[in-house]
Image (cartoon, rainbow, N blue to C red):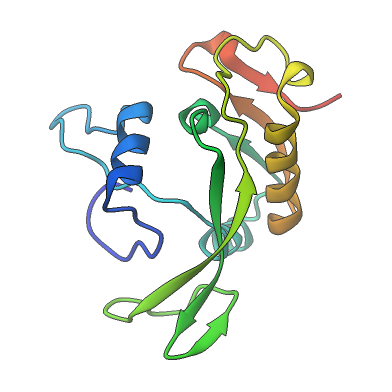
Length: 154
């Protein structure tokens, strides 16, 4: 994320720094570090709903290459209540993200030429996200080069 504002899944410790370094998440003009965190599915569902999204592209999958486990925020806990949606106003509200852990692929994706050759754990993660978001992921990028953008369509 760039700038201020609520970011319930923001990672402020070494995992966040690892994601920032692997993904080169620094402002192109200022060089300031961008805020990084695990995927926030309630926020994604809201964005999909209000924008009428019918398919998604998963960019920078290679940034997660070195993880045995990848976390996904599925719900929030606010004042003891567990919810699966993005509240209207979350400024100043103490939000505790609730995570599901998904198996990582822990291997280099950057050499892939076809999604068919991707590790099963990556395919499982894509399927997991599609089920959680009820939207197809049609593209997965595994590096910065155009040739590293793979179609998931058969």
